[in-house]
Amino acid sequence: LLLNDLGTMNSECGNYDIAMRNLEEALKIGKKLDNFNDLGTIYANFGLVKMKLGLLEEAKKFCKEGWRIGRKLDNRDSIE
Image (cartoon, rainbow, N blue to C red; front, side, top):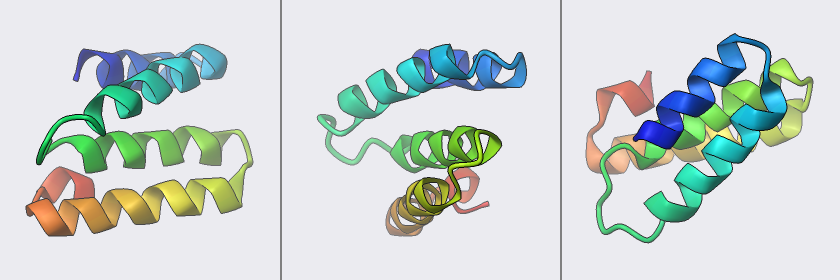
């Protein structure tokens, strides 16, 4: 969760390279955890960073996966 927050913060500050590294590491760790409720949120945040970078197809994939996981785990933040 801390890596997700750091990634989000860095994205808001325009530090997209750092944000991507933070979120990549958060995904790597989160995928190893069973039923990690915030995994969808990390995917969605990664998608938002990719969208800010103009990588729209990649952004769409990440956001869709975040939505799918959010629905599966009933996580409102991920779904929104």
